[in-house]
Length: 274
Image (cartoon, helix red, strand yellow):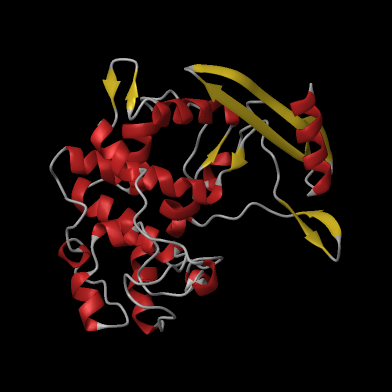
């Protein structure tokens, strides 16, 4: 009852028309519940099956997809990215030649926080075209010696998955993660929402007032922020993480890979974040 009150208060404080929360503990889903409504102009209630954009939580799925390929011996975390994406050129010849797979996932490329996001947001560039254009971006930090949050590097990680597997990032994540976990309502692109019911609408504050926004496709950045899911589906993902990559008798990724993915690789010094 106290938790219910706390979550409802948080919904009002932000404010957001609707939200959903799930809790997994000791192998059980102890809570999966919705709060509020789908939209300021749609009074239908949010429940545990309501679809929301999970945004940058998609990055963890990209890391897991790469972990699967590491388990299969098809790549290694310290492989050079240019060996898979020969067209990739960064701001410095040394960085271009030496950036590794784990660098892509650790926000230590040297590019500025959110640098280059306007290359994919509301553009029709493909992921490859976005990456071909980033050579013109200047760094704001030192390679492997600074923390700068980068969507671009996760786009590159998604393209590595395609280069290695022969599947698109979306196909690989669907077949190797979402399907085995029975995350049946989860989609990898906003373009797949057409015809689906129980979908929360995007909102934001404009001049202090909550307004509804339109869904936008940003498939070029899907590996960084493309997944749309429900808390009911996400409980399966939470359980997979708690069980170190194992679901029932099926191993999605090995416990060794799980520990690697949960190991810190880049210290975040708040005074240095830009």
